[in-house]
Length: 112
Image (cartoon, rainbow, N blue to C red; front, side, top):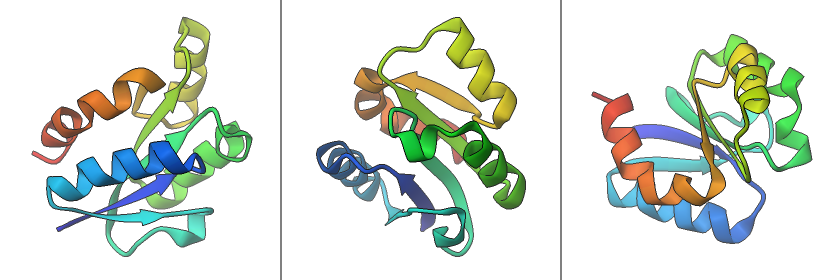
């Protein structure tokens, strides 16, 4: 089983995403900080709408200290936001509306 960290405070969105991940055999942990990552974590999903997790320093530290694949989602993706978060360590940035619909496809690609 693969360990996935969710940096999501929105209860509804977190439940929806974790449910999809559990359906495809992932072990999900809700995390609040870099130190909450599960053992052998491969991927982290970050709610970039949440002030605590949208902090570019947090994203950069998470990437540099853990080396996990980072998937961020935000209400609306613009070129500026895409460039900013890619440069700080996000591997994939998606609109909030598409994260849930595409999560299974994304994980099949990432964990090949």
